[in-house]
Amino acid sequence: MPTAELTRKTALLANMKEISSRIESACLRGGRDADAVKLLIVTKYAKDEDVILLAAAGALKTAGESRVQDARARWTGSGPLAGLRAGVELHLIGHLQTNKARAAAEIFDWVDSVDSLRIASELSRHAEALGKKLPVLIQLKLNPSPTQSGVSPDEAPALLAEVRKLPGVEPRGYMGIAPEGASPAELEAVFRGARAVFDRDFSGPGNYLSLGMSGDFEAAVAAGSNLPRLGSLVFGQ
Image (cartoon, rainbow, N blue to C red; front, side, top):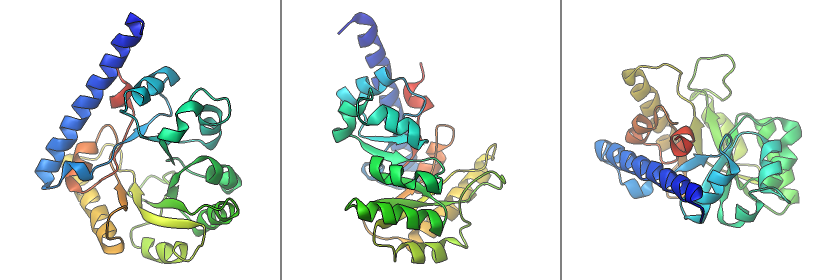
């Protein structure tokens, strides 16, 4: 391995070690088992070479992309990451338009951003045609921004009940994005509120509460998130 590549690999693995340590500390504060937390590595802005290095080291097993077209170009056919696909669980974490539902059902293993029955129905229809039962997360609207997608925690049970009737998808939890610029106390309240909704509606292994990004994942994990989404902390210098 060339020196520059080896140096970069060392830096990436050091980042992963630091993240793992911070997740363990957050779990300790929250009285949780760190083994129950699964890290979703956001690859949408990462260099292909970095993704390949982490995957080759066995450190990248779950990846997140925000755009269907970008994921298709990178992870399928002759794309630069297509060779990794068999060993990586690929999640769609960005907003999904109905006209991209068919491609999403084809490309992704999970869709973590279902925010309407219409989207869920389209995913179900296409997944069923492919012979798949696609795991999905319903996106909670935790951010007051008018541009933020999702359903309110009060509306979530009704949507969940309808999604559970669809044959081609399987709801497996909730995803949410915290308000930007929230104080530590506000973050804790938002995350614990989302945890209460999750605990009310889901039980048993294999279900996920996906909260927390690079700036707030420790608070999210301490509150109960078991699928934080990290990108910049993983691939930063």
